[in-house]
Image 1 (tube, one colour):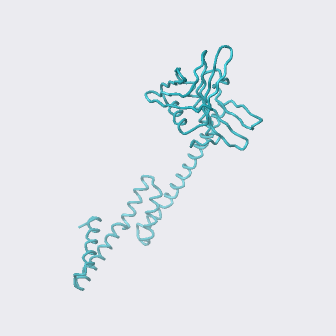
Image 2 (cartoon, one colour):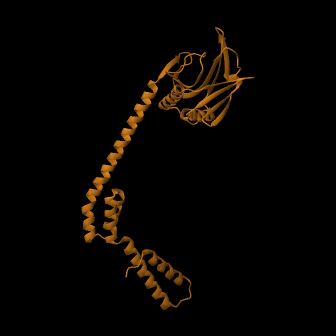
Image 3 (spheres, rainbow, N blue to C red):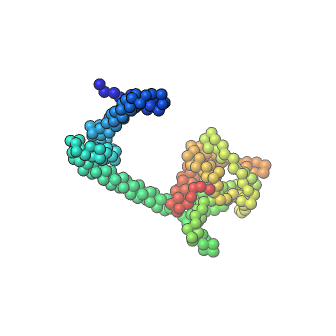
Length: 278
């Protein structure tokens, strides 16, 4: 009659507890110890028997879990070196080793392919940028090609700075133009049903005018707060930007073109080695 491993373990534990209590005679102790040793041996046989190890190895092999199959076969060879099962294990090992090698090669090829695709994606990302070099400060500025070059146009965009040492950083800009001054102070970005307030430092808002129009712009370094908002904007279906002035406000919709430009700049920023922890 076969006894389950759990039952044997419970019996073994019970025998140990009885022997440890100190209330049995030497004869009873010896009897219980012999029974405990027998149970321990039977547990060992059930757990590490030659048949069981070979069956388990074959199951792993069928599922192409070659590393586990190898471990079972090596254990079989160690514990039962002179058995028929051990001879079968020796015959299985070459195919298991071949399977491991095949999986390693496949994993390496997949890694190389992913790296190639990532390099191509990032290379394409920088190709979508236009650059402007400040030779006095030694900084190259990167802008999406669709982003306006002028202050006198509405915009909601990112751009990248990179100095000659390779240091790379990200900046955020909102530009507003109209016929009358708004004197911008803060913003509200509504992404679908969620709203995100954004407060500006006065030193980061500039103004100018010409030909009967005015323009105001907010230009700042990237922060974790702004980065979160930008990511939401990119993924939002409907995005409305409110420019809050000293007395009045003006709203406009962020376009799909602007969202794509944000995405392009973030891709290029990562391609240039920029960090996304601000």
